Image (cartoon, rainbow, N blue to C red):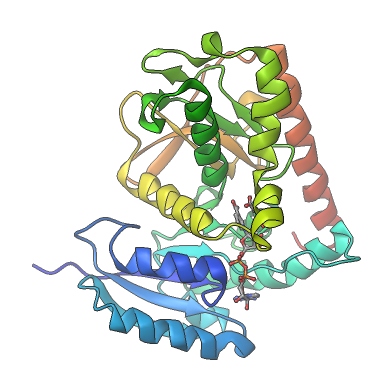
Amino acid sequence: MARTPVNVTVTGAAGQIGYALLFRIASGQLLGPDTPVKLRLLEIPQAVKAAEGTAMELADAAFPLLSGVDIFDDPTKAFAGANVALLVGARPRTAGMERGDLLQANGGIFKPQGAAINAGAADDIKVLVVGNPANTNALIAQTNAPDVPAERFTAMTRLDHNRALSQLSAKLGVGVADIKKLTIWGNHSATQYPDVFHAEVAGKPAADQVDEKWLADEFIPTVAKRGAAIIAARGASSAASAASAAIDHVYTWVNGTAAGDWTSMAIPSDGSYGVPAGLISSFPVVTKDGAYEIVQGLELNEFSRTRIDASVAELAEERDAIRSLGLV
Ligand SMILES: NC(=O)c1ccc[n+]([C@@H]2O[C@H](COP(=O)([O-])OP(=O)(O)OC[C@H]3O[C@@H](n4cnc5c(N)ncnc54)[C@H](O)[C@@H]3O)[C@@H](O)[C@H]2O)c1
Ligand SMILES: O=C(O)C[C@H](O)C(=O)O
């Protein structure tokens, strides 16, 4: 029997990540090869025409799993019945903009979107926030959706996770699939902490194969500043790799992590590892049957503790800023 299509709402659908993301969702890579999808695209009114052009191309690709595309400029309509929501559209920082201005502008996007999810999304809604500042935008949306379980709101650090896998694999001359149990902690920002101290390479501790100087001076800054390096090289922020990470994030959330491995997701803290409850911070997680759990019991050395604390302190500052702006 044909399955009922899953409603996937994508905001910022006419943007560059949207363009890379929509075709992969429609081809079945977000939810799997047996799950039909219905796309619900949200854009600002000025970009609706461009979204219509993308919808024409989606039709032309004749994806067997794509059962429809609807385009909206109203969040209440776009999130009605959504099972999965990918919040990509955000207000980028422009010249002369202070952090408070950026948070205020994004509050104007993520507050009504949280309220719209609260009002009309499906009971099983899963939300991934990609638009920056992703962790704090997710916190704004989550706080404005009080009837939705908080754990359904997540933010993307999977791109950082994938970048860390790639850098470590290049350093050690192994395949990315040989590396397990790597973790991104904290914020999707330059303060994030990519942690290899529990990682394994072909079953052996990764930390035994690299020295602390390389970690501190090369690996961590390369991963943490990769977004800026892409912008400097491409003249635009990462798009295809960000879309790919968004696909990975949701696919893993829905379909589970492999035995003997975990992934990184920014999720509402339950107080684990000293991260204040409620902050949307990146943790090592395992997923099963559409739910995730923080990996518990990892020992954190001084090197890791200091860096996690710094990134979490930045998240707490961002939370305090959105509180003082009345966004949460
Ligand atoms: N978390 C991550 O790892 C990660 C990685 C890369 C990029 N990003 C972020 O993702 C976001 C999108 O990047 P992009 O390259 O696609 O940007 P883009 O500027 O190409 O596209 C953004 C789109 O969002 C739309 N938009 C703006 N406000 C909206 C609203 N209220 N509702 C619906 N749509 C709205 C715009 O019209 C535009 O089409 C940026 O904030 C970027 O910094 C995050
Ligand atoms: O858009 C950015 O500022 C960078 C982006 O978050 C990235 O990590 O590539």
